[in-house]
Amino acid sequence: MKDILLEKEIAKKGIISEAVKKVAEEEDLNPEELAKKVAEGKVIILKHKGRYLGIGEGTKTKVNTNIGTSPEVCDISLEIEKLKIAEKYGTDTVMDLSIGGDIDNIRKKIIEKSNVPVGTVPIYQAAIESAQEKGAITKMDEDKIFGTIEKHAKEGVSFITVHCGLNLKAIERLRKNTRKSLVVSRGGAFLISWMISNQKENPLYKNFDRLLEIAKKYDLVLSLGDGLRPGGIIDSTDSAQIEELLTLGELTKYAWENNVQVIIEGPGHIPINEIEANVLLEKKICHSAPFYVLGPIVSDIAPGYDHITSAIGGAIAAWKGADFLCYVTPSEHLSLPGIEEVKEGVIAAKIAAHVGDIGKGIKKAKELDFTMDIIRTKRKWEEEMKIAIDKEKFKELRKKFPLKNKDVCTMCGKYCAIKIVEKYLGTKAIC
Image (spheres, rainbow, N blue to C red):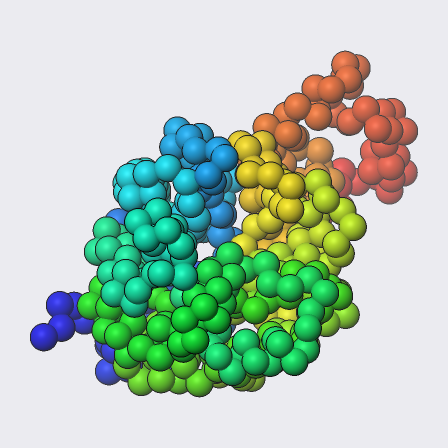
C-alpha cells in the first residue's frame, strides 16, 4: 500500500496540487500548463520542508552546489558554513557528496540546516562502508546499495544520483573504444570496479524496479547519473557516453510509467561547439526530461579558473535548453573547495543560469537586466547594489578609491559618457 500520493501521479489525473500552484506562482507560469508538464515528465518538483522547486521546461534555470567531506578534509562545521554561503548567493539546491568521517551524521546535519532541497549519491556511502566492513568496494552487496538508498530517502533527501545506465553493455563499449581520460565519475568508478570484479550486471540497472519502489514510497526524484561522462574534451560525445544515454532514455520512460520523477545528468567536459548537440541529444533520447549538467567545462587548461570555463559552458547549455547547472569551483581538479571557492562557484553558475534564461526568453530574467540598465544610466548606486548578485563586491569596489564626486565612478570621473550626453541632449537620462 502506497504511503503518499506521487506528484507526477496527481498531475496525470489533471489535479493542480499545492506544489504546482506554488511553483507556478514563483515561476510566473500557468498552473494548468505546469501540471501538464509535470505529468509529461518535462518538469520535476523537488520538495523540502514545505517548500517547492520546479526544474525543467519553461522554468528558470536552476543551480546546484556540491558540498561534503573527503577522507583528507573532514569538518562538518566547514560544510555547514559552505551550505550557508551557497544559500546566501542563491543556490537552488545542495548535494552532500561526503566520503569522509561520520557520513550519516554529516548528511543529517546538512538536511536539518538546509533551506533548499538536498541531494545525495548513496552509492558513495554504500561503497565506502563496504570497503571498511569487508575490505573492498567490490565486496559490496545489493542489499547494501538499496538499504543505503532507502535510508537517505527516509531521512529527507529530495533527490539522489543513481548510475542506472552504466551496464555491462556500456562497459563493453568502453573497452572497445578506449578513452584518453578514462572515467571521472566516482560513482561510475565504484560500479565499474564492482561489475568487472564480480562479473555481474549493475544492480541499479538489473533491479531498477526495486529502486522505483523506494522512489514511489518517498516521492523521491531520481537523477539518472552519467557514470560514463568523459573526463576531458578529448573524449567528448563518444560512444560510451551515448551508449549510457540511450539506456537512460529507456529507463526514463519506464520510471514515468511508474509515476517516478526523473532528471537526466549530462557530461561535464564538452568543447563549446558540441554543447548544443549534447542538449538536443538528451532532449530527444530522454523524451524532454530535465537536463542537469556539470558546468559544462569547455576547456581543460585553466585549473584554478574552472568556475569560469564552466560558466561559459553553462550559459550556452542553459540557453540551448539545459534546465539545471551544477556549479564548478576554482578548486575543481585541484582540491576540496573552501568557503571562498564555494562562493565564487555559486556566483559564476548563477550568472551562467541567468544569461541562459535571457537567451531562453524567460521574462523575469530580461526584466531584471532592463531595470539595471535604467538605474545604472541614472547612476542610482544604492538601487544598483540591491539588484547585484554580489552586493558586498559592489560595495567594496565602489569604495576602492576615494570618490570626489559620488554621482560618478572613478573609471571616468568628470568625463562620464552618460553625464556628457545628458548635458548636450538637454535631458536627464533618456529612459
